[in-house]
Length: 328
Image (cartoon, rainbow, N blue to C red; front, side, top):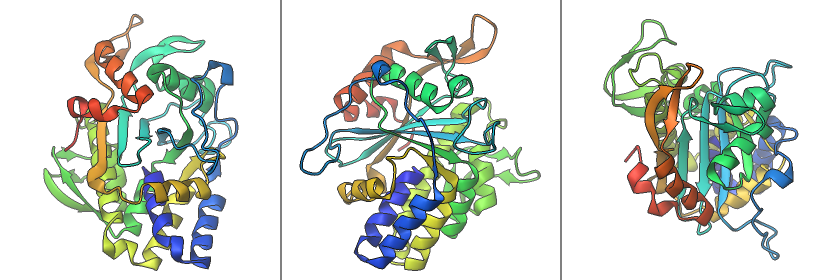
């Protein structure tokens, strides 16, 4: 959803001439480009047709967001996480009518079939085969094509929070932070600075349901960031807009097609969308279990999964979001 924030910023700056060129240049030059993002075309769901007049894909769009606390083992680059497991997995669906946005979290310990590797946790796909295998695994899970990919370095959450002057979070569960020693996040509303925000979105050890609450906290943070980014105070302030783009870009690795032109075009199409039009939900599960080899895993609810698959495939997530929604 840092991509969504970038889209909003580029849209607002769109009438600023050289200013928007500067922002676009910042986005394109400071984001890291991921080489060889997608798997072999023969293994993928069919691509949607491109509009002949605009040259754009005007059907529903799916953007895979992978979050990581670590850099790649090979060269320390966020663009190469082969050998690492993705800490956070989200799929952003932008429907064809561009009237809203859906964000689905996938528990990283979800047990499923990884192409060529057998059954394993979904976040192992990144470790086994990098981004292409992660894309192939999620496309197989949903039966729907991933159009773009962005990897978000968790450190980016700190930068975007500080650029906004802090973000207000309504924390549902009080907890002692394992990442910010001595700090207690009490239940209730908090104005978080960047350091606190990073600790908030990373925490899982403090919760009885671990990654489930971490996913909810990450969704709450993203929603809060979007809410503050869409205020008149932010959008009418060129210095703040420039600071936001500068804070986001260095912590994003994206496929070649996810450039400023794509982001700005999507921003125009989403110009009427507000934070209340963003729905967060989680791939339905049956809770935790144990794999045949003794690992603690998250068990996907196969019956409810069918409805989610249909929602992605038919661009009808509005028909299923109310049942699986995890945030109001």
